Length: 346
Ligand code: TXA
Ligand code: MG
Image 1 (cartoon, helix red, strand yellow):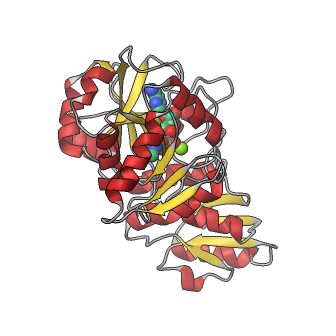
Image 2: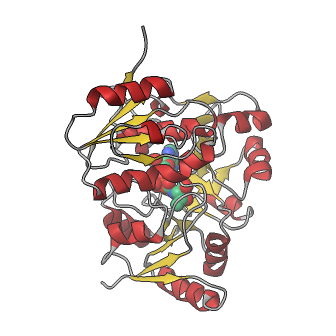
């Protein structure tokens, strides 16, 4: 299959959205930009589309997809129970990078939800994503548009690298603004449960609905035989080819550590802009320590760039574990297979 990558502009917008609608109405797939990462979209109400998504990504079919909507009213047909917290959070954070899990209705096929009785729903804020969903007239199931196990794509060229030949169309809407996937919050259990941290932080959610629980899987690996609270937690994620280690400690201690290992072959550092000039080994910059959003938008493309540079080892300076940095930390420790070391402690 030939994969077209088409940049969207005011001139071609109508034509391109209608081309995408035609493909998806027939059960086909289109990759499109959102404010978080690129999505690989198909009709959320068609089994066949879900099957194609799993195949194109090489994703296990028990790992459910997020259903994207353009209008809040669509929730009534997708969910069978809608708690008050849902409306409060939607009012504050939709459209935007928050996915909420609700009990599903019967119109959502088991193929879309990995046979779970719940459905993940998100209303993206990216104008192209919203226009695409509206023009289709059906909700769009879209996981991140990467091959399973690779870092999520934050540009159309990342999508092309992973899915060339597997899908007919990639809508190029430039780089994604946020750069890490949406926050996933379950409202289908007794108490709201944070399953994946993102740009809508725990603190922001709690300011609207009060205290929430946080899944242990966010900061630590699953134990053997432990059932994950979200199927995505059990799969290896975001792994670049290099062996990644997260290094916790102050800037001075991180740089001192790099001095110790600087003769290692193929070693690279992932540093903050403020400290990068002090690195004794080659490095990529991972945003500013003082600017959490800049870290989110730099992380996945840096991980892909290390692959291109054929890095053998990457030492990444640890983000904080609060606010948006918690989301960055959550992705990074997965890329590192949970390998974290502390430096500078006496
Ligand atoms: O920002 C995003 O959320 C992007 C863009 C394209 O919208 N999408 C995305 O989808 O990241 P995906 O499929 O890569 O990640 C969805 C995560 C997975 O970890 C999955 O296991 C979890 O959400 N999930 C989906 N439905 C669920 C459900 N019903 N119960 C528990 N976890 C669910
Ligand atoms: Mg993904």
